[in-house]
Image 1 (cartoon, rainbow, N blue to C red):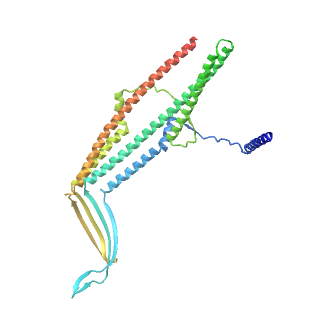
Image 2: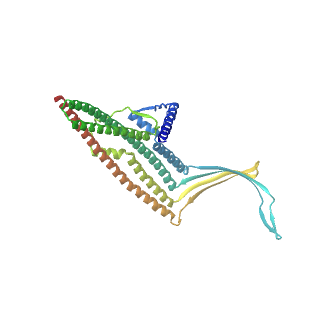
Image 3: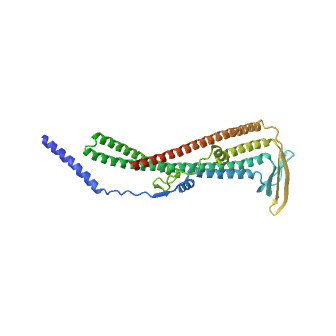
Length: 390
């Protein structure tokens, strides 16, 4: 009985294996499709990012919104022309005669008229328009800041990929070196000139270098994905970078010269200064509401009982509005605008300190990188001398 059960189990397992093999034979092998190759230089990468970056496109739309707002404020200073036409059938109440109400017979009125209004003087409207122009300049400078940030981010990711690729190449060379050392030490061990401990140590070092190589390869792929995301292109591409890492030969600028150039050209500094101007003009606009404003208006049209039986009429006048008291609303808006101006002036100090910190950090990093490059070159030169003497 026990032999029979064992025999049945063997048949069952064998049947499963046969079914699995038949399914595997029926399933055609899937040929992996090669991803399209995308070769990019640093210049091409930056151009692609500026063309496809969502942040850059967003700020371009903000420029258009600010330009439209400026046109709206300008329209308040330009003549406003409108036309209207009206046809009515009506009666008039004439009073009571003998206690009975009396009205006219129904009659028609046809009226076609054009109206025009023009602001002659309004300091508030003028300052609002100037503030909208300054706000447009702020939007343009913010777009420039975003472009600079995008270019810097793409360049940084591009260099990071190149650096990780060079690290992977160095790890590959180390792996090949340790492979040769393992073969060499094994040959010495077979001749009795090395021990098994020496071989084990080198094999351990070889495996460690292989592990470091895999980590370096993963860093290359990871930074490539980060770069692709910054470029805004499809992730399903084989990204190939055509530029190489090279050390710049230009001297490091002094801190004073670099600070002067940064403060004069950094778009975020210009944008913040322009924001202060916007707040200052907005405050002036609210204060201008205290002043009288003058507006001209008039209309001209044809009116009569019938369209073909009408006469021309017109109305021309000038209105001067003098603000006296609005319950303190105007003074509240003035206080709010003054606070916004002070906030923007405080932000200018924040931006200045941020630029100063970034500049000093960049100079320290650049100086350290140049020193590390010099030390690496000296180390390579010493190693080559050692090889020649050996």
